[in-house]
Length: 319
Image 1 (cartoon, rainbow, N blue to C red):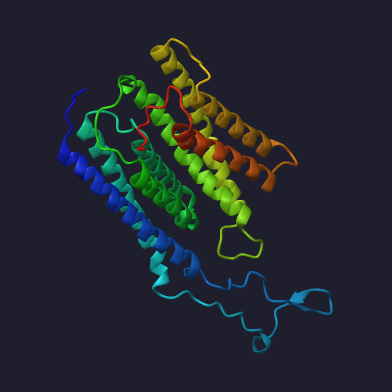
Image 2 (cartoon, rainbow, N blue to C red):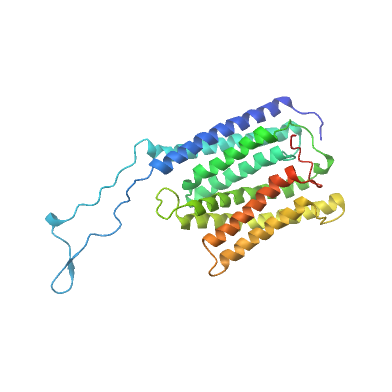
């Protein structure tokens, strides 16, 4: 691997990250406007008009002159109709800028661009937005856009403010093809877990009478689908990590804090899937288990590198 760094590409990567944050912020505003004003405040009439009972017990439509007028439906403002589509477009632009920042960072240093905490968090935010955008193509989950963009913006802002390091080479332990296998799988799974975590938080704070937030059924469905996809990928990441550990350190398991918390996270998500499939332990109870698993994930990805030592302490977190 070349020791020199392409300063021009490294600078372009930093600039693309700033552009990504701005685009995600504007997209978040668009989703919020769509959620708040893009829907009618009063839903269209869902129940048919009362029918008249005839002498024979049958029913007949009321005379035209006696028909009750349908309840008025307040149409959303004209500008609000464009808020959602514009937000989706901005999200895709931000996604492209996020991808560009990752690619230029990798080209600048001549390696896989997730060799430290800054690069990992940037890639994880990209994975979360990717999960949302591609799931939205199939399941129409635009109602989650504002909340996913909040998570991605906070993640990128935190990484730029507290984790950013200059582009450069990594320690010899990370000069391995296992980075592309183990870390990539962890990033993809983490992005899906973030989608599920956002849905879980909304599930717990949603009030039964709220007409703006997604329904509990929708939130439960999104979280479950995301975890069902992410769990086997995380399982593969844990196994790949053990194989890499054997190749690098001569053992599959060494009770390193990162290894321990990766396994704890796996157990927690397995507990959610088991709870979700168990009769009488669904809904709020299962969602609480999911959020406990999500907290374990966040501590494993960020907290272990910042607060605990071990063989994974080469994350280059700035002091």
